[in-house]
Image 1: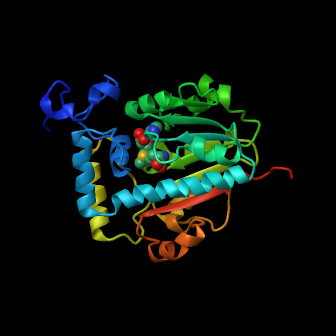
Image 2 (image 1 turned 30 degrees about the vertical axis):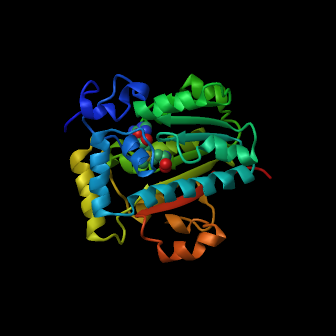
Length: 288
Ligand SMILES: C[S@@+](CC[C@H](N)C(=O)[O-])C[C@H]1O[C@@H](n2cnc3c(N)ncnc32)[C@H](O)[C@@H]1O
């Protein structure tokens, strides 16, 4: 992979020295930076763009898929905010872009408190810079596979009151968690810490009904990435919601989760196109 040294010519166009933490590995793609590329961002390197373009060669609508995930996330956050939720924990938040949660939530809940979590140093550096001067939001570097550490983090505790409802976002995250790392156990640990009335906002990649090209893309990614993906069936994804009550329409292909009226027809036509399921679920037991 050429030009991965920031002192060399090609990476000068990456602007690495302006925003990239010195510790990052620019020889391997990162899911956060590839996602940023799909979403039209500039926080990515040659190695990320190369893998992203290889993915696009298999599945040309990858950028639209990433955009659709953000659109789902916005619809879900607005649903939680409309229900009164004013605290958000966005795990696997990515490089902040395209309507970060604090902006969307505060349309309805001014002063909403938001903690973003990601393990990617570029996402964290950009997030910390974005939130400078915002006392009601923080960006924390942590690994989703250690949910207890996230729940106990003082920066999380300073902003989130777990005695009141919280919306936890796990969007495009849990397919980066292998079965061996117990994604159901991660969700259960989070669930047990949440007050009744809390929301789980979940989006997860799936191979259900997908064409050969899409599976080939997954295999390409897993061959090249240090963050391999485990795509799951609808049933496996539904099982992750154990102990929560899904809101209507339940666990559905992502575009079908409460599409905006003007998008409904297109969503119905393309329901399998984005290779993922989405759900918004509530922890039962809230009084009133
Ligand atoms: C595909 S991006 C999704 C970003 C955002 N949630 C969205 O839906 O637009 C996946 C993100 O999950 C993060 N991630 C993957 N595995 C993680 C882990 N074990 N702990 C924390 N973050 C992780 C990646 O760094 C990346 O930013």
